[in-house]
Length: 221
Image (tube, rainbow, N blue to C red; front, side, top):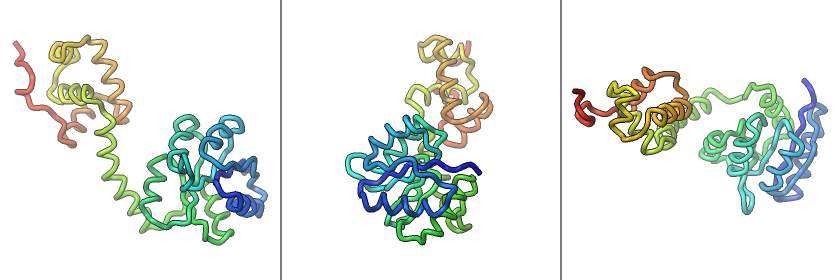
């Protein structure tokens, strides 16, 4: 593999130095910079385009989770690993939800760091079967809530109309908007829910309890 260009982010100088020293143990990593805040991390990511970012989870002003979220929005290609002293499992779940590819404890052996980070950059995340199950279980619950919250009130109305079998023209008449607006809303809904067509939308609405009953809409003449 090519050398992995790494940006280190931690508000404590000694912690930054320690992470840089660990990365220096393996020539496959190249530290291109070390900064002390989330704002600096976002700025330097745009300037240097690193392959991997190590971010401390607890930093003043902007913590590692928020920094990860913002970087991922603008630079989705970059791999991010959250670094912390806490082994609280909820932090791991939250880090992954914000787009991080991994989670490392500061008290782990340097050799474990290297092995784990190499697996991350080669897209082979080393999770135990037990931890993988917990993550999947957590995301199964969280994803439904997040998908539903991602839809606006108007989008939920349109989803309900679609589930009742209404056409775009009928939805437009029911809600008092143009067909063009309906089409754009449908595009947004499909993209947010990562679905392909009206059939899948109807199934989703029924599974999530968002389907509207026929009497909720005007009777067809």
